[in-house]
Image 1 (cartoon, rainbow, N blue to C red):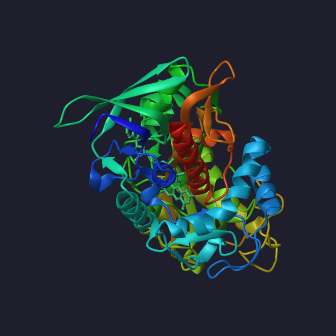
Image 2 (cartoon, protein in one colour):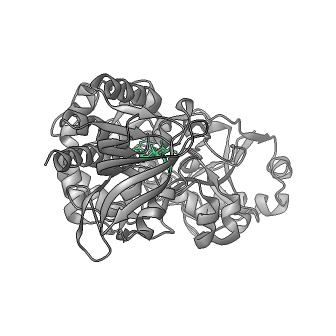
Length: 463
Ligand SMILES: Cc1cc2nc3c(=O)[nH]c(=O)nc-3n(C[C@H](O)[C@H](O)[C@H](O)COP(=O)(O)OP(=O)(O)OC[C@H]3O[C@@H](n4cnc5c(N)ncnc54)[C@H](O)[C@@H]3O)c2cc1C
């Protein structure tokens, strides 16, 4: 490792690798600094499965068109309008080209997974998942001559008047070193693994959060950039958070701990009370609100309750459901008040209206006369064994970030563009995602802005 490069990329996930490859293809010398050891390289990216890209016609693996306008409408709906329209539309337009570009970098697609995901038309799945995708990107980057240093946690950035000069890093064996580069691409993720930082906004409740991905995304680079004058974007309390199994590990539980069974049953809190419409919308448009909903419940715990008729309707998870031959027996195993759970289920069953069940559309199976209503897919819970998954908030990634331009260039607090600093991926996701989420967008943000950031960083370095 020499100590001067054209482009320095901090991070080792999708955004970083797309940036590194684009910068190298743009003629720059590139160093990637990945804070994690090699085995754990790739941050949250290694847990991913798919990416959402606009396309005008069906492809080998996508069942039909997904136009720029439809993507935009979806984004508008899930964010409630809290998005930067110029950036978002630019990202959507560029996403069309990413479908091919990423394949040119060695990544392969596979047909969509089925079940409740309903993503066959909109999202392309990585053959072999995120880890295989990353391996392909690393291989391509290394073949092109990108240098990669693992166990390379950047601990300080030297920035003067909006210009990046050098990064200092700590390496377990090789010690401290300063790296200089003409351009910087920050692709070091959000701050989701930093419980102390989360506590600033969530209080003690954050102790009950589980972090779905890497423990290395502690937001240190984000914090350094904001402290050194980069403009902040996004609400620090906003994040992607889903309901995951309460038995999952504190970090890195990955996709197999996520529960997609909410629409098939009811969800109750520790007082055995329902608290939200489980059938509000098609699951890929709603799964990402359940982390926050559970976070707002006492002790940040909830239970998805269903019966034996639906066990094969959703993707199985790592943990088996907890079962009881009666509602009371199930309640006992969950340490819920049996009478309270029986009352909730009895009232729910009585409110279920006749209808034709179809989980792929907003069907007419709904409740009447209870609060909250279940507006679709409501069916009686009456066939033993009764089953439950305990769930906690599973934090995927945070939205607080650095403000960027269409060229992925960071803006400084005074509104001026940085001379040589670019950002991509989770660290700038808040530009597009003010709140909410539609499945597959994390990888779109990383790939599109990673590619742009790398290209622009190389262009700056060459000039
Ligand atoms: C379980 C799970 C499933 C997901 N599934 C999907 C999916 O199917 N589709 C989708 O679009 N999104 C998905 N996401 C979200 C997706 O993972 C992220 O949006 C995306 O991977 C972000 O890419 P990134 O490169 O910005 O960050 P990451 O991939 O998280 O990479 C950040 C990198 O920065 C490094 N780093 C952090 N601090 C430092 C430092 N100080 N010095 C050096 N390096 C540092 C980390 O080690 C890491 O390598 C999922 C997330 C999780 C947790």
